[in-house]
Image (cartoon, rainbow, N blue to C red; front, side, top):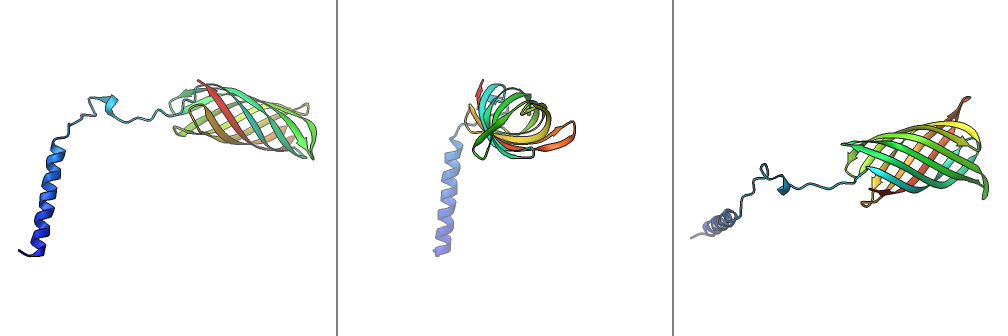
Length: 175
C-alpha cells in the first residue's frame, strides 16, 4: 500500500468518526425557541443621568470650561432623544472669568448597542449674555452605568456667530 493510500484512508476514517460525533449532538431549533438564540443585552439609554464635563470654549477669548451636566433620555428602538442641563465655570490664564450655562435638547441614533451619535440644539447664558447653540456629539457606553462622550457646539447670539465649544463628558446613568 502506498503512502498516499494510507493518508487517504486515515483522512476518511477521521471524517467518519467526526461525523458520528456530530450525529450524537442534540439538534436545537432556534426558530421555535427564541430564548436559545444569542442576544446581547446592550446598553440601556433610557433614564436619568448626571455627569462631569470639561472642554475648550472660544467666544472671543480662549477659555477652559469645567462643570457638571444632568439630563434625561428616552430610547425608542435605535432612536434616543432627551434634554440636558449643563453648568460650567470658565477659566483663562488660571483665573476664573465667569460662568456658562446651557439647556439643550438632543436627538440621536444608535450606531451600535453601545454607541450613540446625536445632534443638539438649545440656548443658555455666557457670562450673563444670552446665547444659542447647535452641535453634534457621540457617546460610548463603557459599562452598564457609565458613558464617555465628546460634543461640538457652535455658539451664536442675536448678532450672529459667537464662538465654539468642544467638550468631553462622562455620564452616570440611573436606570
